Image (tube, rainbow, N blue to C red):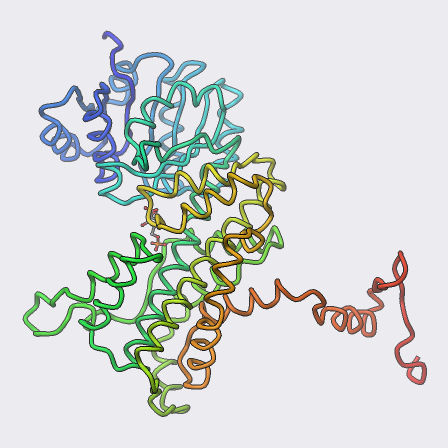
Length: 472
Ligand code: 6PG
């Protein structure tokens, strides 16, 4: 059989099919493989007018690809990726490239890179964001792995990615599993932003007594300003959707208040703990999804600790402050995610270029937002910037919105409204701008009960004190 296809996709579910159709739209000859004949039929039907085909035999699929082969996997993360690689590997040649485009854990990607490199096969961990729509019409793409091998995929990825001001939302992220790592942190920020929007909704609903329609209007108005973002836009739309089961209610009001997750947010928090790089607002978002599942306990405790219904006196002023609080906390969510990337780049030698990451997140992905342009400019000007708060432009914005942020957190705290993400964003900021923290007391405590020693402000070295001579 003559080799003729430029790229092959394994896994023809919605994401794989859509990405393949996107490649075909852009003039690439592509092919797919799936064990499920229905998936093959669906791809052939949707791509009838394109230069694409699909196989149910893995051998035929592999033989149909030009060398070096570019084989993309869009299969569920976990053991399925390993079993696909196991079947595929004997059919491949040195120099071929496997690209795992699922949300795999970066440590699995590290292992797969090492396993395949002995056989001369390049393994790429590549994050793709933008959901089904993004895959079909332009996602944000985060590929990491061997830089030379990236050269043979660059043209395809740039063509299919989203574009912002003509720039493709894809760049070579860095070596090793950096692509999957960056996608994981993208999802951590996604969790945080979703939680902040949920808390904003709760405040408007419970402190301001706003109807769903009013909340829709507020979110829509904000989305026309500096908070403009994909998540805010889709959130605003949710408030107008009616239940189609004949209840006459808004669909949102018929949905259980228990949130699920697939794990990428949790991984971000776990890694941040391993690297000892705090991302408390992202952690709160992850924990609050978990906390939401304790419904029975929550219902019981709501009865045990009743709270008077909160009210805000001046609703118009409150909305102004809430917008400021949301903007502050969104900035903080990005700042925490980027700080984690800054640390990972050092710890894992990823050589990340944070301005390029901000650049490719401006379009196609779930966390795309107007503010990413500011982030992009900040890191472009100062590639070694340790923290976004230290950028002069961001500092000016924070100084302006801080009063609103404080006011919202104080009001919610007094009213007994749960605002885990908002409150943590403010405390995180306040800790980071504290020149002398009370951590000297922690050191004193550690030394008192465990002789763990401490460092002095006026001399080098470690010291131990006899804290209570009478007891010793
Ligand atoms: C994206 C999304 C995508 C997926 C999340 C959902 O960037 O396109 O992040 O990867 O929708 O993984 O995650 P949870 O199921 O954990 O909310």
